[in-house]
Image (tube, rainbow, N blue to C red; front, side, top):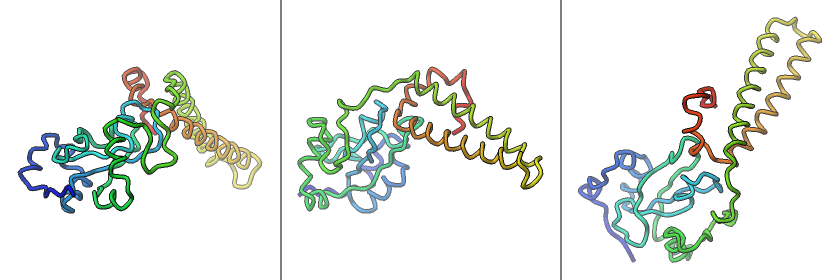
Length: 205
């Protein structure tokens, strides 16, 4: 069984301070394990797809797994997290060999997550659609702000106040539905270079 204690000199060999300072990396070190796993939610972002669901070796000491080169957030809309992983747990689950294959890109089938969609079968990101949806969210947000101001001015219990309140509820529902759609697209990392200078409001949510 692979069991190599991670000593302080080995940790000093991690040149990327973002990786070294991550709390889960510190947690792994304190528990004497070199393995870390990335969460998965079937992202459409090709930046995050390189890491999603895989197990990595923090220091490169475990040659069976690829070395960890980055930690979340991988892109500007990243929702991934990492958690400490133990070889003993993989052995109990009987998924060690499968995770080695999966993490090294030799198979697209996730060893444990039944809801995992293989990368090659995921729909391509429509950046134009995502940009359009994000603009729509901003527009709805402005409408909500205006109606909330008018509610404060309206007489309590009046027909005007009731109508404005109902409109706010409906607008919030529409905004939430659009945000759910945006989360499934996951193209924010690729979209940023196109909008960074022109649409600063798109960073507001």
